[in-house]
Length: 359
Image (cartoon, rainbow, N blue to C red; front, side):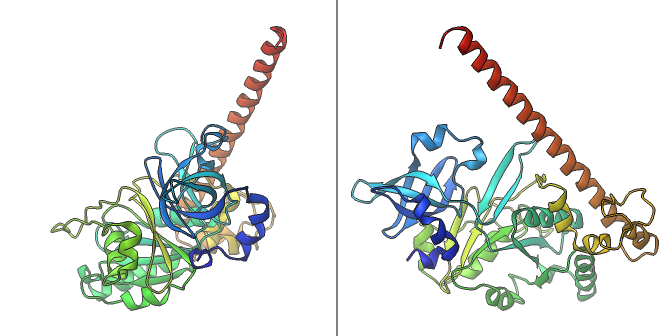
């Protein structure tokens, strides 16, 4: 049972350290405003956090998220549970929270492959695609690009979009239409039993429609979630209105597991410089030929990246976006270091006050 939900040898190796008397293991399959649902050997039940876990974590990002494996204690005849521990994460999807600051928001954990969904019509945005690729490289997740709503563009337009994607990433691309059904078989064939996938993209690009297509006619996914995934009518411009408000894990009839997520208006990166490099595969390859190993690809002599831009072999916009994300990553890292220094100084002050007062 647990194996069918992705509990493979990697997690089994951590099980001895995560075990607790009177507890078992389960996977988080839904999170909605602090409410959890988990699935273990006895099926899916609502769950709440143990006080020690809820109030003694270093960061909200350490709390359970969809896809996490947890140690849980069942009660009320197995109809509810308490989550005590969170397994180490093999992979993760995370972003900087919206607005200023550098807080981290978890999107999902233990994802094998993420489908980056962009519409061929109004939503296509290479810059946003690059940000998703950096997010995935930072979290160790394999990317696949999915272009939806191909029925709204001409074959020539689609060819041009595919060329733009190819210039950004060597990742696999699946172009499809939920209206005509073209490309849906290719998406289904990309799903393997026991593997966990995630749909990422802006609101209205067709993520929930895709999930409904994948679950059409099957009872298992409906029973898992308790309801169908809601969508609204697509507007005359081809822009959809997305209604997913929670992150949830669905098992398909073929045994693949899929996480649907709310649309993201902002994809703020929390990756370090290595994560940014991992999201820009072409630049990372060129960097191996730079004169200096620590080349920043800005003004250094013998920079193979800048030379490729000058020759027209690397798109100037792709290069500029790379520099922008590198600077963003460096700023975030400095912010995290500064926050740690302040936390350390505050901790020392508290200890000093307690000592002075005789505690």
